[in-house]
Length: 270
Ligand SMILES: Nc1ncnc2c1ncn2[C@@H]1O[C@H](COP(=O)(O)OP(=O)(O)OP(=O)(O)O)[C@@H](O)[C@H]1O
Image (tube, rainbow, N blue to C red; front, side, top):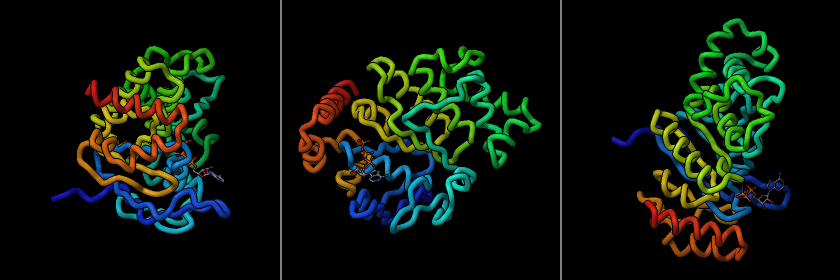
């Protein structure tokens, strides 16, 4: 029997004034999955993540986590229910250590505000979770250092560790590989696959299609706010779908043709 979906996005529409950024999009995420959410620039990927986490309100439709509707819930309550978003822009607290940044997030998972998290009694437990998460994302050696001196690759991993410290049922990753060179991107993609193998369900937004196809089990493709491409079991087949090729190549921007190149390299190397 097929497992019940962990996340159900049901006919979600998001409008900004006259612009429809998401148009009646539906998809499910199964427990344990690593699902890629892809599409060319402006397709609506980030808006979809924001609608899931409650940063923007869906104009229509519903999002359910473990069967429970999130309609009307503010961001912090959605986090309590098991969502965590790791953002593209990395913004750690610069004056405390890498470990304390993660421990603070672990505390915030159990209290209502960052201030309460700071004063939380079981700081040892939070530090333990912090160390565990830093090891999981591969930056345990940086625990005592300040974020200010860390390269982007480490900061991206720190951002991921902070999201994981919330012990989410579902981790949403918004372009984690952006700005990294190909070697760093490959290594971080491997870490994301590892996090998934160790039990975290993940939705990954990413333009680096080679890495997406290497690590994702299934893809949802957006274009102009709509879902395109059939649901196929092999993500590498998705790039053969004429609608997907047209969506990526139709824009004719450098980024999009690079995306296709990445995809083709990914298929060759897989
Ligand atoms: N807060 C907002 N107000 C008005 N329009 C918005 C807002 N956020 C996004 N949009 C518009 O919604 C559409 C989808 O944008 P979105 O950022 O979700 O796309 P994306 O697929 O994440 O793109 P990219 O890959 O370039 O990050 C775009 O036309 C964008 O200009």
